Image 1: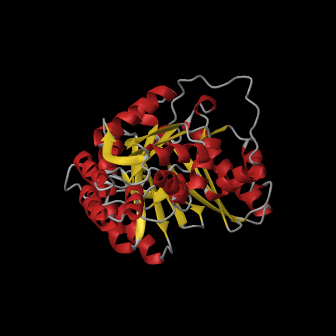
Image 2: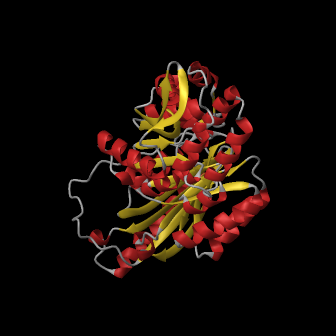
Image 3: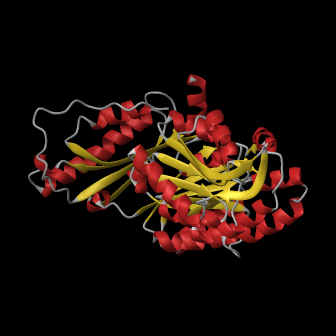
Length: 422
């Protein structure tokens, strides 16, 4: 990667109220990358009385694109003719240094005011397994139809899925999210649309559902298998997850079917649960980045307590089953952890962490998670039911939980570096 040389601050710094106007030059350098290109380029330009309004650099498979928008320094050009001569000097100087480097230069003059305007910015994260050209074409067409412009594209990961992030300017966020959600359904990809800004990197609490999110399957169905009533319980579970019946009542109905089961089955199931692929990577990486992590479940505390210890979680909340004489009575100890309780748990965890709700992330898959997803700063539907996907901020339908990291702008390379540092 080319290095960037920053010149010392001049002894007569510009006043903070300098107004940039007139004409600027967009200099675009392209060709094979090597160390020192950026240094040489900006060192040569530093000899001129100019200001840098914007810089963008991308290296893809060893090929460099370096774009810089520069303008004559208004405090050092008393007349239009002085500014014109500096514009000529900029182009000549840039052409000479780029030729010496064996690269290509494109020059374009444009109003300096364009460099001072910051249009609305949006991050569009695309997940594909595989990611096909047709899907990318659909994304690009939709962005254009929504009045947006793709300013930059970068790859966040090559596995376990291909993750690409587009930086889009000018598009209406809500319209783009709606349109891309429709297009993604027919392109076998996941698309997340988020407003750009510091808040994206500032989310410091992640709270997850457990059954079919952090772990594979439903704990109560695993208990039902031990009790011999798996089919009956699964039917009630499906109704609840679709939002067709009240969760609290559905839980009570399912637990009644477990009456008489040996309480030892709880510990057996806690040992039998299988984490969703990528779960350990997600939590390990988040904790290394300083995030607080919690789980809240409509399942049972024996399992969530086990997971909290195994994964080093900061918070855990779940239902408790009544046990007498070593057997389940078929009752849940009230109050039930239902839809409202999950959202309240998010608020409580955030308060205990000192994290504003705007800096929280919630992940879930069922109707019981809806209020929690809508309360969080970012609500993510993970392999969720349609009603949940429609209500959440964004959806992931890949089978890997660590793809959530890409929605936070964390690349696979950053994960691997963190793992290497241990």
